[in-house]
Image 1 (tube, rainbow, N blue to C red):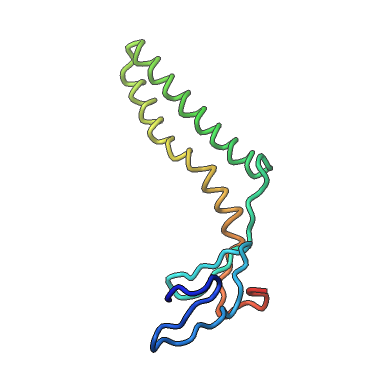
Image 2 (spheres, rainbow, N blue to C red; image 1 turned 90 degrees about the horizontal axis):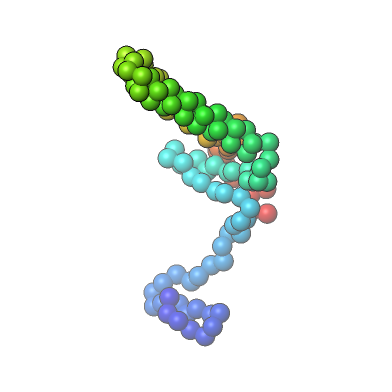
Length: 129
């Protein structure tokens, strides 16, 4: 493109003329094309802050953090009392409990995002309108 008057564009020599877009992009929808070439639409909207869904995620994270803190305190206490084998057991339990921190985000993805994504073999009827 070569700059022209504001709001107008001039055609480059030998270039094809500009055309209007075939459809308007709706900013409320997310359009993706997967590796298989099928378009995916996502019509989900973020929930209001501190909704039931957010409370569940925050509660699961709080539970995971409380569990990890409790295991760390017990391991430190056992080590301070000279119970090295018990301290090692609590330390191992702490390491094994780390994946609990993923419980909130994973359940949020599983319940909310997963069910609202659809793959289409052809453009949906309401696409772009």
